[in-house]
Length: 110
Picture (cartoon, rainbow, N blue to C red):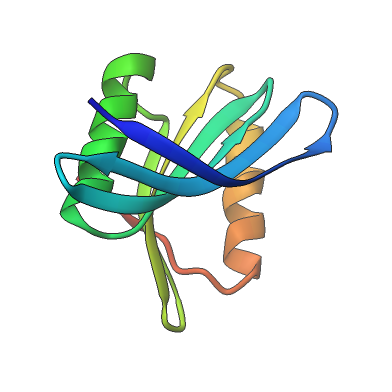
């Protein structure tokens, strides 16, 4: 069973929520960042065993993610999974383009 400690939360836009904190399971922990909106849900975790297990847990709850990738930017690295409620390919491509414009280099995860 996962236990969550939320350290930060905000609502940058109507119906959009961002949470960050630490998730715990079997004496292992991982930092997480989650964005929930009417269009998509995105979960980013540290690139650790516990991070992969947390993504697997959300996959069991929400179904197979639309996008699943590893992000690198300088010393920063994380695993991200995104679930889109509608299959608007144009919106997904625009999100990836904005991500690349910030200097991130996503690599697809298996």
